[in-house]
Length: 178
Image (cartoon, rainbow, N blue to C red; front, side):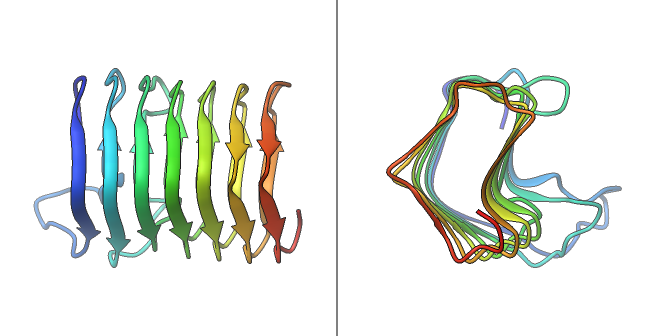
């Protein structure tokens, strides 16, 4: 996805067999390119049978290591079988809500590299290999009404994150740690 004010709604995205014309595996089921603004992704089911190769792909990827996106809304998502269910890099003002991220190889929802001032509301992240929610190098994130459970390591993790993140009315249980 590239541009502004774009919507992806009521869809199923399946990453299956590799396209023989592609040199690399896809980076995500849905990849919102840096510089895109006000993207809405709603009522989407994402599955992956390609397998995990070199930490790729993510179910939804917002931005990149160099630059991100602004003001994305991600709602009613069901993402399973990816490296990360959702990976947000350098992307500000994202609203992630009413979704499930489960059985991913790394983290259900991973916000990193200054993906600041966003909300995670009513999101379940479970049975992921590393954790439910990981907030790394990011501030101004509010997690509310969400659950991180039965992950094989952490439930909710804040690393290298300055003050200003909030967890309210949320639960982490059945995880190896927190």
